[in-house]
Length: 156
Ligand SMILES: C[S@@+](CC[C@H](N)C(=O)[O-])C[C@H]1O[C@@H](n2cnc3c(N)ncnc32)[C@H](O)[C@@H]1O
Image 1: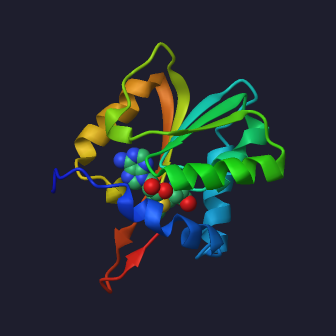
Image 2 (image 1 turned 90 degrees about the vertical axis):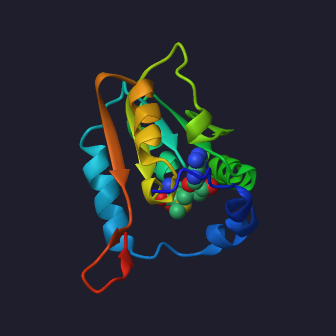
């Protein structure tokens, strides 16, 4: 596995394009949202790593107390904030940040989300350690990631 630190340059460059793309597989995306929502409660605080343009955080916001959503591409976060304003959602904070540099703060979260992210990180063990550092003992980690199917194609 590569330990080279991936750059945010690619994601900043494609952020506008990414934001315009329709969800590739709406049925799977809806199912992921529904599965995640089963674990959400009004008192839950979530952290999302690699939030992109914010769609998942903005969807779940109605069912939790608050969400801190981070992405290392500043353009993704700019678009996420625009989407937040358009949606009128108050309990999500979007911030620029790299999962690998995310130090444990005072606060621990009830749940961490990393959707379509783990296949992108250079050092997955380090990434999972960062996730663990952010969680209350017994906290929830929700991840979906690309897999290589029998036909050699990537699927979400
Ligand atoms: C495939 S997109 C997925 C976006 C969103 N989670 C979704 O499901 O639509 C991956 C996102 O992860 C971000 N990302 C990649 N590596 C990251 C890292 N180390 N720290 C924070 N964000 C990262 C990218 O900037 C990009 O927005």
